[in-house]
Amino acid sequence: MEREWLFLLIPLVIGVSFLGVGVYGLRRAGSLRRTGITAAGHIVRHDTRHDDEGARYHHPVVAWTTREGRACTYSSMFGRSKVTRGFGVGARVMVLYDERNPARFELSGWDSKAFFVVFTVVGAALTVGASSAFLILLMTR
Image 1: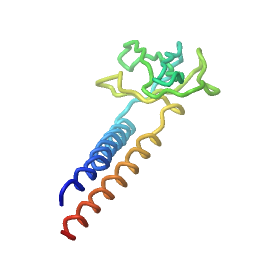
Image 2: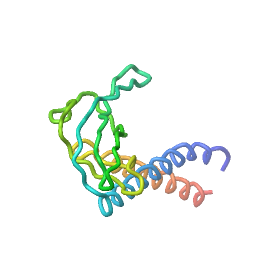
Image 3: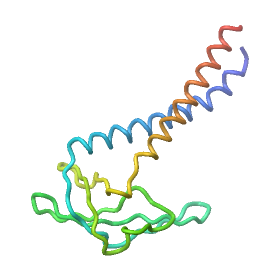
Image 4: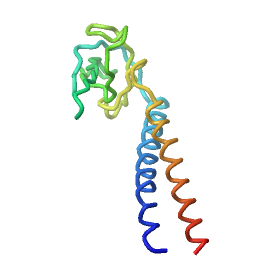
């Protein structure tokens, strides 16, 4: 076994990284759904960000008031290439937020756990595949 195992490190590291991001996101979303507080909010603007290839992503900025009366205005961590119906400026939306940290919130209908599911599945596939190949490589030597 000379350098073959080095090539297995690339998909293994990528897989473990994707798996970590996916599981973290799913656990965070699950925790927020179990203990979060619902509030009515409205979209005040969209932060538009560009990626390296020039694609634009719109992140809605939502304002709401907590149960304690604290005014909150935060941008969604999820961006989309276009603003869909019901998420334009001034639209009324439902927000699920963490009482201890209102910056940790989910915008109903916009934020999706599918992103984290994809990361988890791809990460698990890469991790299992690379680990299996590594074990086969060890057993055949």
